[in-house]
Amino acid sequence: MNKNKILILEGGFNEEHEVSLATAKEIKKSLYSQKIEFKSLLVSPKSFEDKITNFSNEYICVNALHGPYGEDGQIQKILENLSFKFSHSSSEASRLGFNKELSKKSLRDTKVLMPDHEVVERELINKEKLIEIFLKLGAFVLKPVASGSSFGVKIFKNLSEINYFSNDLKKNLSIYKNHKVLLFEKYLQGRELTVAVVEKNKKSVSVEVTEIISNMEFFNYKAKYSPNIAKHILPAKIPIEAYETCKTYAKIAHDTIKCRGLSRSDFIYYNDKIYFIEINTQPGLTSLSLVPEQLKSKKISFDQMIKNLIDCSL
Image (cartoon, rainbow, N blue to C red):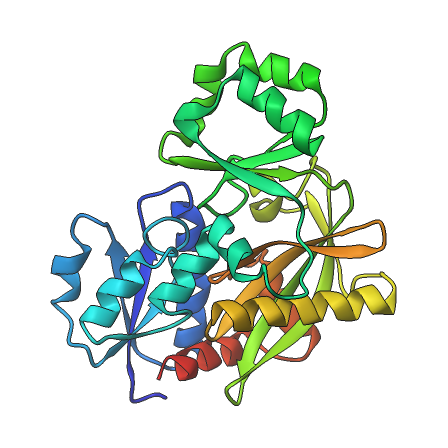
């Protein structure tokens, strides 16, 4: 692998810019410790296609981007068209995984359980629509259809919370200005679980089940990237049947969406059942991230994981 030319893609332009830089920092430390030479490229959608042509497609692109453009299939499609090899999933798998509605549709014919949900265009949302959704789903979670790191996630448990939100609807919806479609998902007040899936000898393997206990209402952006806000229970102390179901569902999601190299799926354990929430085709690899922690519990080092990601791209 040392003979390969490595180019780290980092930054991006969206709300997950800082997360990308933190992931890239850890990847650089790993490559440096392995004495693997690399270059890095700060990505901007406006200039990426011009800048990437300054590199030959002998480079293997290690994608440290998160969020729109870097994680949703757009940059992957450009790299494919230019015949670059790159880490993580293909453009199509990235597109399906990043879009929560498409990933749920992909899993519809599997045995994976999912909370009821519906999608609505942002421009069509008003107080009456929110009440209609509440009467249909009960308590619900509002989130962008296509985003990551729990950006913009809000929980509505009763009509009074909807009324309060609707008092200044335009302002409260403004955080979703870059998102045309929003997802409304039935709120299951259960235990938050997550499972990493890696590839080994061309086969996907679920690593471990972690339970996340957050001091916040849920495992939001702040809890994910700030120390001492969330506690990780590894392995999760849940019944063995639920534990195995969680690992099975994560592998089904990874394989059905045709992820490559690495993914992480999130679940809720509610009323003795496991419910799939979403898949992350490019989970964070920061010092606080869940995937490195799970791999470490199986005596798989961060360096080994990075090497495997690069090997899977060949």
